[in-house]
Length: 239
Image (tube, rainbow, N blue to C red):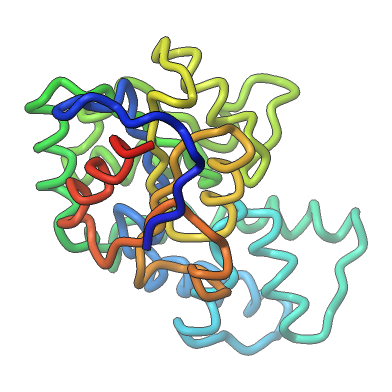
């Protein structure tokens, strides 16, 4: 699906000056591990776990919203103080559930390698904890693929998490790229809304963690897998 914005066509063969990727649901399928972490957290409060399909739609906005959604699904609204306490618990639990059951999304490794071979600067922009993102990237041997890795805990003061555009804008400044020269690849509303707010071409990946139909988010293009990323780049060239 293409959603053009009326920009002039780019020259054939032009490559983006930056391609930004989300992590969970885009490069990795981490729900099996996240479900274990959430189950451990809920068990401390005597609450039942959720299946992976239920957890899938809770992911994407960082650890705070994940904790809120997990308790809300049990009909519990956490006070600000209790929310912070549960976030602290989750940050202790989560490092034990990062790579045991997490897998790469189809074609992720090949897509990153292909862009690197063409000298396209890559960045990872995630609401996941920075420490967790680093562990996952190291585990899969992907850390050196990215010129910039920006996650929660590493955001400079004042930068809001996705879906605000702040993290994307900061990352583009680090890569010395303008919004019109960049692509954001993600799977959920947080990614697509951040890209649109930043003026970056938004690529939505199916089979990720979106809680709403991707068409409803109005990205510039929807692809079925990272194996179609070149199709998205071709569409980006059209403006």
